Image 1 (tube, rainbow, N blue to C red):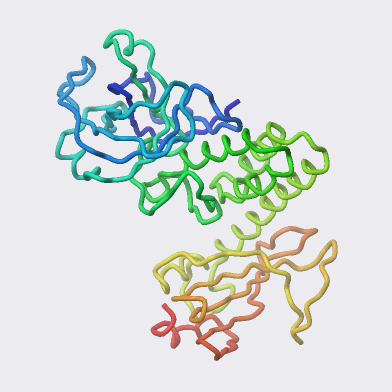
Image 2 (cartoon, rainbow, N blue to C red; image 1 turned 180 degrees about the vertical axis):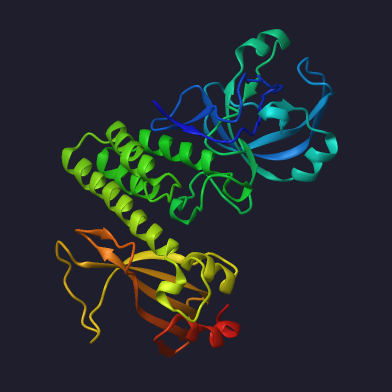
Length: 368
């Protein structure tokens, strides 16, 4: 079972003797897929680049293409006995989102010898018959832009991936998403009962997917239904789906709040853009229970005020925290009256309480 997404097309082909393009007929709006159960036709493994493959002549291309040779280091799943080495051919986007060959120089620049890659691929039956060897390919509209992505950090089969830290699924920094998602689907399939699956599912549904309504409203329930049979576990996890969707609504409202509504001494821009400008990196965002002005935390009710905390800085001992009241549980987020609830600048053991956003400016040199 797979859910359909739409993405710009970027093509990666993968082979176990050779990988070639299957050149789909489409423009950039063709759908890709985000599965909710593992696909037993897919090869999912980690590998290291050991050399380069090519040049390979492909009828659809105007020039020969180059790829990489990889040796598997760890295998999540293989429909057939794993091979000692695979050739991986990678393609670039051409006019109208078609595919084109890659040069040796381009491949060498992106994939140095020893580079670790995460691979998700399927057997390519037609060309396998033609070349009389096993060929694999990566769906060009996979849910991540790279089906053989260079890893930016050490990883392993046993690593528990933190989906909550992702800022989307495009770009090399998040290229491991396709691999990690499938790795966890196999972890769910191999788990000993529903209780063992809960922690994995909680990690997966914490993913801050850009299309929150689709992800938490549609895919999240389907993912749970496909992997959990116990009614009580299903109810608890579905409640988390709803909670994540509600949180994304409030956090989105906080990010888009115009700064002049909060502090007339600052220029017109969104709250998120202001913090990005000040700190050079995106802050963390979290739903918080608003506090009364005397410091006593109120118990949440049906129409409790909802606050969003934005936190940015150098470390856990040197940061700024802004608590923004954005709405209530019953009425949702306000479009006209968001308010700063509190501002703290933390410098080690020192805590500075500020009243207005512009008062943060003198502290920026120390905390960013």
